Image (cartoon, rainbow, N blue to C red; front, side, top):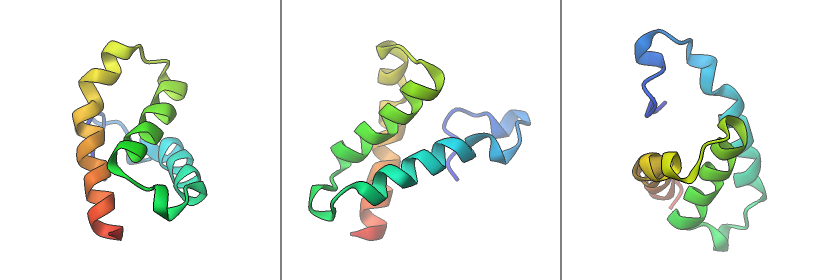
Length: 79
């Protein structure tokens, strides 16, 4: 698990991200394989976090590099 918000490191339980992970997995299952790109995955991550936390675009810009890193790892793993 990647704790890019630093919540787990400050003592929040690991299941803090469980809802977001589930939402992301559902979206990934619906995504046709030929449409899977880093940019598309980043968009899914942003949509999930925007809905959950109501983040403004400024916050999304701050975490986008983290989302890009995670998306690249997903693409490398599932290649």
